[in-house]
Length: 64
Image (cartoon, rainbow, N blue to C red; front, side, top):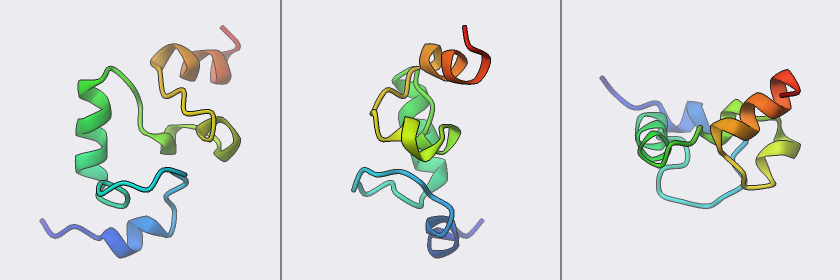
């Protein structure tokens, strides 16, 4: 499967500059290993906090 990095970057809201930006499979793998979620799971405002924890995701989406 060919990576569509250029296309992925159009909808990537990650504010960090890293080599995984736009390469979703590598980004997901990286954050999964850290027990986190990628920035695209969060709103742009939430993403900028840098808190990619699963706990923060549920707090921001379910109010828990």
